[in-house]
Image (tube, rainbow, N blue to C red; front, side, top):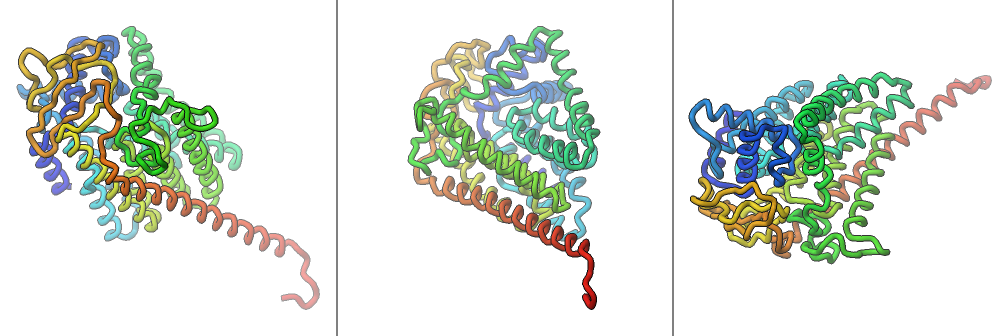
Length: 471
């Protein structure tokens, strides 16, 4: 942990990362400081994250102010909150792996988690916070078989951090159905729903009293789909040259049988999700329910990264985190953990390098960041900065002082992906990984069925009257 934290602090200080993302976050912090969290969504139309991360950033900014400093773009002063989240995740990983008998294997997995280059690049270097909702998603799944009410709380907090956490709800739903109809236990469902409701009731009550509930739901949730209409937004998935689709294609255009590319991609994901739910229903009869839930969550997260349109390069991180915890139960899944670590690392680094070279085509959200934009990444340029306006900016320029400076413009326009077609091999490997995951799950289902059939046959034979002389 000491080495992991030192590496993060060193890289966070040395590389600016995506200063456009960080600039948005700091802009949001300033909005909350001026108007309060309850009115932030009303005053700033660029906020597209749920409120939990905003609340953490606001608290982090207040702590910095106590020491007479503030968060600056591209520096450790801002990325400190990312390092703190990673530190908390490492502590959680130690706790969650406490039941592993092999201390050597446990140490290896903890090291793979703490020193994973994808988690370091996406957090301490980039300046993003994907580890936060990934950790909350894992906690929601792991606690499901122990304290269902606590799982509901974690799941609600995950959704209040990032809408992407919705991918674990089918996994949780199938488990609760198994408990209710197979095991005749309704208490887990009641407990989970109660735990899930509490954070949401508090959130809804708070924003309703401040008058910002409608805007919060609209910006953080309902507007999430369709904000970026490219086939892929730098995610090396099936839409990155693998099936002959231009990654920058508009996903609202007709694709097949009158369906848009977006609709077709969501149907693909729905089919994969259905298979994963069937796997969970069958495989939970094997006995190691927590392992099955983690595998299903990993596969669901990776299918979400690979199949729908409009996916960003970092959206596979929850699947990777789940894969690392699956390996604690099933060493075969080390293939998935290592494979994802390689492909996602290259994907993220290529995007950052493209941003540094100014090739980024933009991820428009139509809200604008003012006309002067960012300077060198160490602060805002004089006379400009980040405006509160909702209109489009003028195509702000971003500095690139370091190899991983930022050239990503949140202003609309341009293609949705900047990676060259020569990196299609990343998407191809990811496709093979997805196929491998689904095949392993199918094979496990078949094994469970065979065991059940043998057990039923043995029970039938035991129930038949024995003939004379039969031993």
